[in-house]
Image (cartoon, rainbow, N blue to C red; front, side, top):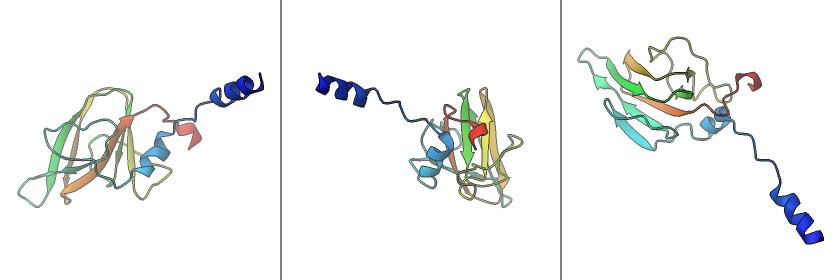
Length: 132
């Protein structure tokens, strides 16, 4: 009887709370996919996007963000046309911008003077501004 009670107590532990801000910081700078315009930005995979040369010293690329209820973290400030953003509060230097993606949309990176940008597009579960 003691064994069963102990077993139940160990397996009945509450699941650890999901924190998308913290988890994003853990993969900051990692690159699982290298993308160019026309590729899909996959959920949960840190990626480096190579922007298209516009021929005037600037670069740009447009992508569809097909998932509602997602978060887009960007490793370079001032590159998107998504409007206002805030840094990831857990690692603002590595991720100076994050956007709440409430519905499917299109994002343009640039025009900018940089050729590549790091991004993480992930589900918004565990995305709680109140705790950060």
